[in-house]
Image (cartoon, rainbow, N blue to C red):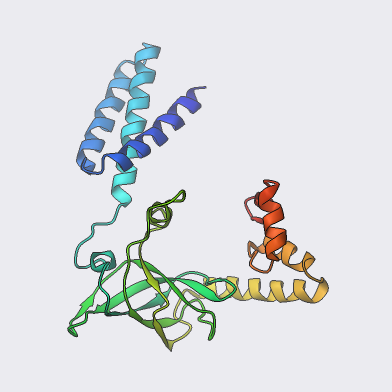
Amino acid sequence: MLLVYLVSAWFLGIWLASGFTAVPLPYWLAIGGAALIGALLLRRQQTAALLLACLSLGAFGGARYTAVQPTITPAHIAYYNGETDITITGIVADEPDVRDRSINLRVAVEEIKLGDGTAVPVTGLIQARVFRFPPIPYGAQVRFSGGLETPPADGDFNYKDYLARQGVHSLMNLPRATVLAEGQGHPLYHAIYALKTRAQATIAQLLPNPQAALLTGILLGNDNGLPPDLQEDFRATGMTHIIAISG
């Protein structure tokens, strides 16, 4: 039960920090440190020690959340959200998410060129939705031209918070794309993605669809090949976790 209290306090601290973003990191650390010292000093008084330990874990959870939030300065790509005529250069930093008509790419940005021609070195991730063809692989150095947007936060699903938890604070929708070079990423990831591609091709040779698509989703986490009606059946029955690796 003690573990439940402590873990709950940690997540409560994260939730509080997400709502009180103006509280600086040193404050969370000071509260957590003071509460931890108090818990150690009062360790013979179980109730007081537990309350202080929960307070300490909650404050450190808040500190953890605050510490990973980016500082949006002119050196971060999200600073330029809302610009409609920019060109960015960067490296595709994750496996492309292939959809029916488009591909979602995570790009680690290296430079942004503004509409007046000013080039600024920047850091940070963006998510870009590009046309499916020609395909752009992991590790490609790319140049995108278009507008930079803040992810939407309206509706039942807060896409902005979802992407922010993955370190993404900017979107580009169907920019003009140019591949400058390939093979830039980490060699280990290149090997893993190549193995995954070969495994997917082997499954497609051995099994017909939709069985091949289902097995690919279960083993490799790629459910893009599932027919829409079958995907809807999984959603309707609450069994979509089966076609996820974690499931």
